[in-house]
Length: 335
Image (cartoon, rainbow, N blue to C red; front, side):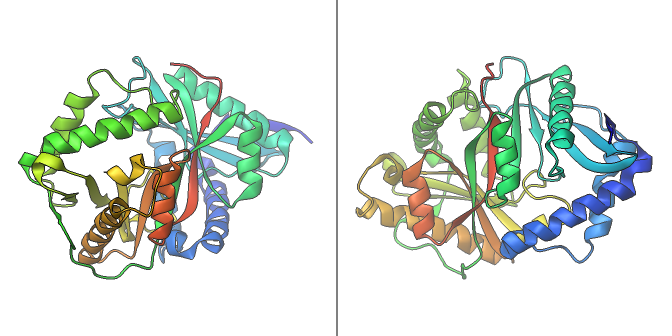
């Protein structure tokens, strides 16, 4: 049997859609709170596949690659070129991300060459590191990626059990007076990130100034809630409840029902003793973010947590979150 690796074409969309919808059922079985299949899933998938026949030019660029086995498409990858966030320094390069809507064959002789070809295409388009997404309990997929040199780096933890909850204690909406304290806490968080994985989180030397500018702008964004605990002169934690992103959910699922918690740091994450009052304040921030999601009619919250930040992961688990998805980073790459 022969395998042919090539760039996907518009004639492949029906075969690719069938594979992606098949994978959607596997994800839904793993965690229906996060990956419930949308009623219009086929339409969503075909809309996403439009980037095959109508490539997008600009900072975000899509690469669809297929593996044919005796003329039948057996596997597909969706790689995306993404610019680094402003606080990350990739020294002029970009990240090459293999999104969840990749379908890998169980046959190594199919998926191995397909992955290698995808990495080459992303590298030729400016990627200086590779990231791959995978459901944490999809064992064959995560093992395949680990065998190709990818290491678990970031957890995506999900909670669908929250209820409307107004802010408690000293949790309140952030104001311009809080930006300095938010940036101070974020700097502590970024230090932990760089210690955890200096390849993925190579912090930009102007990160404080860039983050401060983004936080000031975010205060006026109507689609998110910025919350802090403590007075402006001594903020103990901050959290931002924002909309979910299509980067984090494949198109067969409805990201509009998911809230995302990315920027979240509290003094409790710096301390070894999780029984302190600081933990209660961190949990109060988490509940307030969920309350903001509930007010917007969202059904689940997804929190991003580096694998090695065990204190943060433990507090999220106490808050009812469980790991669902992984972002994995290719080892041995340097920027």
